[in-house]
Image (cartoon, rainbow, N blue to C red; front, side):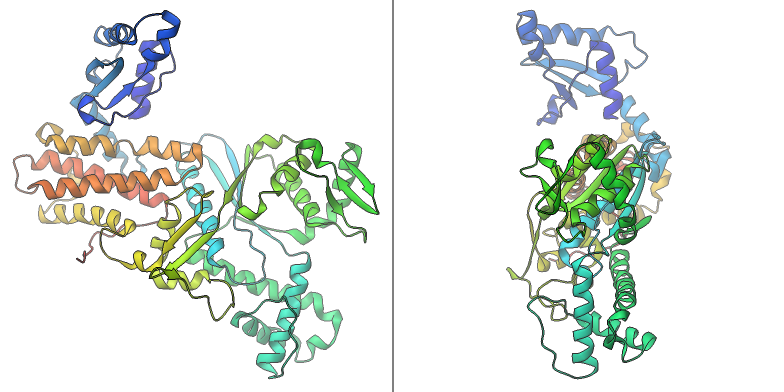
Length: 538
């Protein structure tokens, strides 16, 4: 709807006009301060300019000139009130599209979206969930809007963390299986999962497998795959699945070729037996080591190889969702992409900030099974995946998020996901009371609807523009805010007066069927299926 209105306004005024939604709905459905931007150029009052521009709509010969009921001017702002006929057409189209409302055909644009990419050393914790939920919602939204999204998980299976996994597994086997008292180092992984994996290692390779260091590689490989099974299960419980899993370790086979390209471009140099990337040439604070003095490539070298691998696959856009602690890697990775001859502007980095979890206003008690982290699986079992998905998408990912589990358990209006889902359930129960299906309202007329129902129609028709803006801005918060606002309007409408049996029943029900559709589609982008029946508690 908003797109159609904007295109029409742009056509009449011969310019790219910015549209706003007036705070006072009585002024109209849309407004533009365009006259103010012309005032300095034309050296006229914005009010005079606005009146001249508004007259263009009153005499328009455009085939779309039935879009507005009226175009008027208030204090230099041009206000547009949509016609009932236009609203009716838009509602009918939306109801015909049903769950494809706002969906866009293929744009022939491809995006490689990498997210989560947690080290395969243990189950996911609550911090990983934020990037996972954001990535899945962004992918689902992008696909809905016609983009081809490939979701990828980068498995960091090389480096010191894998050695630490081996050591931790060995210690766990000694303590929990062989009942010994090992000497634990200062840093190690812990948790019941290590005991379970240890049993599988012994079952497959025998009880003396840890006695021979030559067995280390096969133990690590088995442990890594078992951890990935746990990770994939945690993700599946969140509704997150990946198209590709790319392993870091095999990529190092191509390091010599990548290194040669960087040397040829003049962006590597040797100092103190180490090899540095000239990332400071691209705005980094310092040049960065890519090969240690022992000849072993660094973590950054792995990132460089991986991103070259990505860019060779010729996607139109590359998006990485990283933890906020990776902020310092942005310039150095982009520098390497540019040095390898690719366009680093095609790479977008979205940072995901930390999460603070409370329970009853106090810090959440850490998992006994994993020491000092909060397991994602524990939180899902406590509040459910839907509540977790929604709360993680109520704030921009680059802002700190704090929430209380007890609040997410409440079955009342203080819980945002309950509040929105209850709005959808309320509409379903209204139709049940009227003994009608929501799909039966297509032939009804909005002429019979209350004015407040028409306000609901306008708000519900904004969904497609909200979805597009959320994707462009990579900001799922815009969708959650929209859904909460629409639900609030629905609850207010419900409490204001009679619906079933009123003289306006048919028009009101048509409006409500659209509201239900917008709520369902919007929640669907988050991977949430609203219930048709719910009970609220005082």
